[in-house]
Length: 370
Ligand code: SF4
Image 1 (cartoon, rainbow, N blue to C red):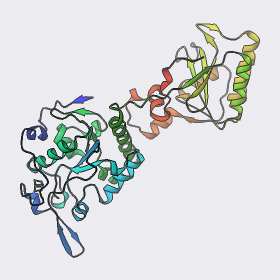
Image 2 (cartoon, rainbow, N blue to C red):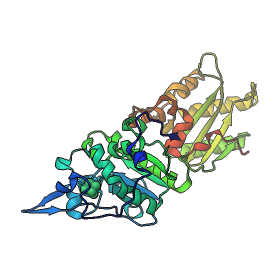
Image 3 (cartoon, protein in one colour):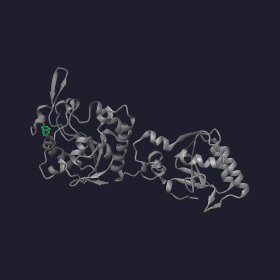
């Protein structure tokens, strides 16, 4: 979690000790009251100082920039085309639109939808601060650069989106996210929408648990210790629609390092571990080892679809060193992770992170049960 330590003080900190105001459709504290209008056919609709919408006990508050034409016409924040993207992405993240509170930093419409100026934001903040104090949300989501800058100072939203911040004077935690209008403009790049949804998932998790960590699910690991159990596992693998596997080794060089064990999974949260050596000693007797190796070869070279994380880096070279020519390797978690998000930091591409991100097998580090 980060605390705000910008050289330029966010405008909200300057307003903290100032007044609080209830929504006032007659407000003229800044010049935006003159421009807050939209065309509806031949009619011009004027609407000034539009407050937020949502249940008064909402734990999540979304703060956007300012009214657009559709917001002026309907008198509600986050509507129109970008609002529909927002609602769709909320649903994909497991959040119902009617369980969150939505509002804007600036309660009127700037001319030609330009970005509100600092003095306009400062003039309008008493309304937003009143809304925050009444709602007392756990999480405040800063939607887009304008809302983010007002609370956190001049950061880059492409760098800090999805991070959790504390701000002096507020009990809630702050999470900046992209603006849905940016997601809409970048419809050609599905990773933008994916990042937006991932940030919303983080917001949901943080509001519910106070942590951005996924709740850990217990995983069941079974150590295959004798030939009967091994043969039973092989029957299960040959009948599976798809088999996930993972090789554990003593290092990364198949020429000098050794394969210690192979884990197989055919359903979520359950894996079977076939040991090959324990503490440098062969696990199986000579006859059993021949059987295990030949059955492993038969399985890995079979038509059964297989997948692994980072298989191209580790698993395939080590299996090849055992004389196994892997076939029907249909899915590689690491390769897919690059395809989903090529800009993800390298330190988040390790197996542990991939397990949490994509399949809930975060108990990867847990000990064997049997
Ligand atoms: S933008 Fe805010 S402060 Fe300015 S006129 Fe509208 S409601 Fe008042």
